[in-house]
Length: 583
Image 1 (cartoon, rainbow, N blue to C red):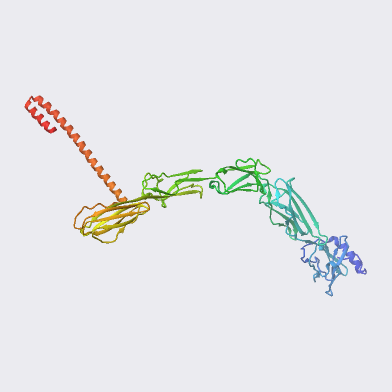
Image 2 (spheres, rainbow, N blue to C red; image 1 turned 180 degrees about the horizontal axis):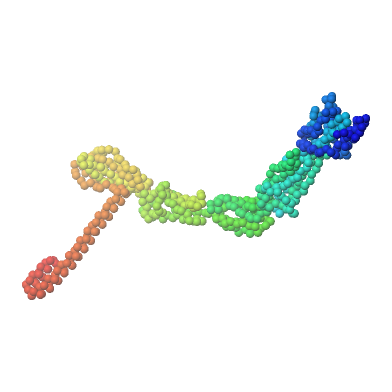
């Protein structure tokens, strides 16, 4: 393109005239760069063959140029103008591409590449845009809690060092919060640092919470523009404690209401469903109209049965909001009469009673010497085997640990009773003498022999069971002797003697004393024999009656026959025979 100025004009004047002519005809080219990166601006001109040099400049806001780089086409040398903000940041390549390191916001200008020939000046403008990604948004100045039905500042969402400035959006559980009068109030502001020219965006949120906001996450985001277009950064979640008033009061009892017994400690706990929960309550005890002010717990120690009743609690500032529960203090009383150690004489009567008083039906168990009895003991006539340790035990099955027991130690005493028996050995060479003794305390047995004879062995004793035992000796008397058995305890001394004939003289043996068990067997056998005999007698009686009726009927029939025949002789004979038969 030729200049309108002549060849003799000065170079500088020609350059100015050419620039003014060429600028309107050139297009716009934009370079986007991230903050801190290197800005690369190619010169969008074809290099002419007669190029003298190339230059780069930028334009001030008022349009005046500032030259920053020069490169000669002949000397291949590069010169950078003394512009402080670009010192040590410029690089101009051989193809006149300009690079600016460490891009700043102040680099956002209109740069122009100029190629100069002897008679022409060619220009190509480039617009530089610099973008700075903001910091990740953060929710600060967070409220320690939110209250239902109250508009309160939730917090600030802040994002720093952005260029250009961005927008902030609030979210509740992932959904955008839109301004709503009295419920959602958003206040947005931005501030630019005069040194770095970077923006800080802040959005304040005022919010009226409800109970549905419990555990709901709140977030915010910043939307900004970068070299490649629009982008978004998201903040971390923030969950707020939601305060709401108490709407219901409940009362709890420890231990469980079904297991409270006399002597326990009862702890009443009153709870309100508000947040934060109430810290103080009024507790109402049975029969006390005035409440007792306390924390959320109230303890009664060592309760008795008269503590049974309705227990209540309420809010201090709202007594109509009340809760109640019924408590039963279970009790169990046992009275054993007689109890402790009781000494009675054999044959005495002893009434025994175990009286129970309880808050509900109780089970009663009788034990004797650690063995469970089938029924309550009753003594109309005491025996030695009735002695022992008796326990009456009662319990409430539904209440753990509530049981009572009392014991009776029964001692049955009796003076010594003696019965002596003898038995000759089948060989006829010895005789066994047995002394059966009954009594309590256990009597001591002593033998004495009067007359000649020898004791075959020492006395042997049986076990002492139910107040009875025996001692026996075996002798071979050469003449008649008398054996004396002496039994003695703390109550009395009893003596009994038995005459024993010489071994050469036969005599009747006395039956041995039988034990209680054998005695019962003998009694059973006797009852069986008596039953059989009675049955036989009844059968014989019935047979006799039947025979008498039969004979009576036969006699009447014979009389009628004789009358019909008219034979008086035969009638007499029949009568005689009948008399004999009856006899």
